[in-house]
Length: 289
Ligand code: NAD
Image 1 (cartoon, rainbow, N blue to C red):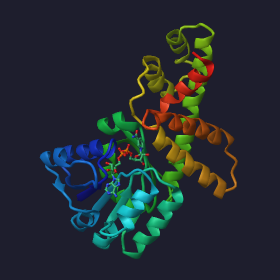
Image 2 (cartoon, helix red, strand yellow):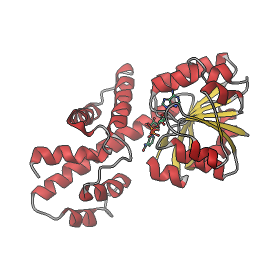
Image 3 (cartoon, protein in one colour):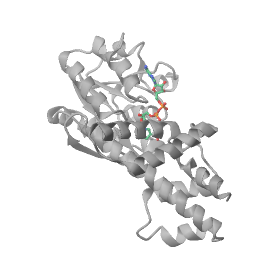
Image 4 (cartoon, protein in one colour):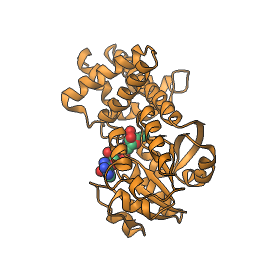
């Protein structure tokens, strides 16, 4: 199976490298980022999304948000201009579930089958090939691409029809954001009370409050290392998609709205490109820690 890979950023680049390392033949494209390192590994550089799609059986996209995926898939010289009927399109970006459904309909009209397959795990798991992938869409197409997804993933779960992958990702992003807020709030309090935060971490990480988020983010917070990782502005994008989806469905999400305001305040403070664990800075500033 020949694979096209569009979007070679923090996540897409290592994911594409893992596919090349697994002996898949790749055609890659990014409108802004360099492609030389992937070409040096054996990939072909595409000249547009259309060009990539015309040369492959499976197109994978890893782009920031819904408008970027719309442009790459439905725009001029886009995937749907070049793809042959029967091509499978797997969008691994985190976008609005409604956008996945709209794109899937447009793809279907051209005989292209689309799956939404966003990921969790961040750059380290993209590099290790151990991402958690949550997939929505046609079960037969899923079976055809499962081996390819397995190369990039520690777990691949089909959660339902098109859009279900991104609904699952929104749930993931709400939980991660609120976990970071909870950890930041709790550690700011214990630090202000004069207790060594490293001792607090050691004492509680093996108990019920322990979490993957705490294990990953507390060492960064304690070192004052806010290099992304996952940028505040990308998390704001996901929270906006969560709020929009919740409001469309008449679901009340007050905690999501709360952490959104904290992340917006950080962005206004110039922290948009910091890792999302910079939420701790917001609490520390208020508490004058
Ligand atoms: P990124 O901004 O580093 O990469 C996106 C890439 O898309 C860039 O290289 C950009 O040049 C390219 N691009 C944008 N518009 C394009 C276009 N029209 N044509 C071709 N290329 C285009 O973002 P990222 O961190 O790799 O994240 C990608 C997606 O994965 C996002 O939806 C993000 O929310 C999600 N995600 C990120 C992480 C993380 O930790 N960074 C973790 C899980 C999921």
